[in-house]
Length: 358
Image 1: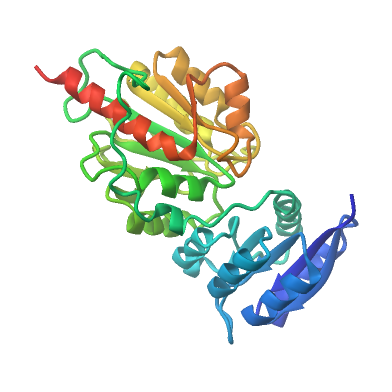
Image 2: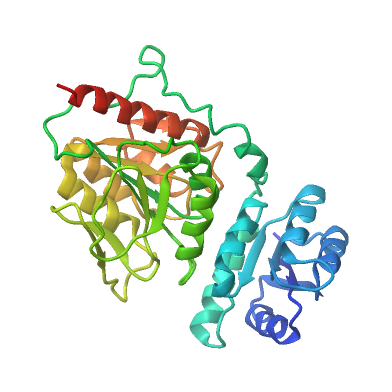
């Protein structure tokens, strides 16, 4: 294979210089061009055919959001949004328009450089996906549960459980996860009768912006998880990246301190293991698209505890990694396209609600 061809886009020459300094010492990467605004970026992406574009959002002439839309419509290429944390909500709007990933503008140090280079190398080989906004339109009212004859819910009965809800859903995701989460969560009705806990690998400081972005797409309530939150039905709790989201026996959230050796932020295994331990057969574990193997152990423990397990299939995944590991381990009961996961969730929750009625 040849070198990874990168186009740098930012109206700040200082920022472009920093990113260039991070990348140009790596023998596998070649900086093929730089652009100071979105219009230049669209032109250069077409002419230079890079393997990856780094994209700022706030620029003159044409902003990053508009540039992403045009690039993805004319010459699709993996796009890494490099933005300030203050722009977190807009950064996830950029994901909706086709960007693959969002990171904060890095500091000038060796660790930041290594992480940035690794991210560029990982994303450059990812097949780009169609942006999701058009896919969301018209789907909000098309989410009736799957019929029991065609696709029965995994859990048709259950034991006595605490009042308020009968099951707890825990979702693990990584690269491509924001797109997948938006498709899944936007299909759930406002009166979805169970809580949903989400561990999405994400850059520090961006989880709140992702939660706000998802809240604007969804009928269910979406919020950034906080220490001591009482877990309520119909609420989606997003883990911050700076701590691991876990649950207690009193149905409250605890934000667990991460260890220096932790690779993934936040840890999907931490969430899924805690849900398996505390909720047992009341837990439903879902593993979506992502790089690596985080979450596979937790999904296995949910299955061992008698809970239900789902995974996103290969064809609808940006990266068939985390979910593939879980599937190959034999811990996943159902493998579904991203479009079918919400219907399965509604089917499981509806069956449990009916079974709990006197």
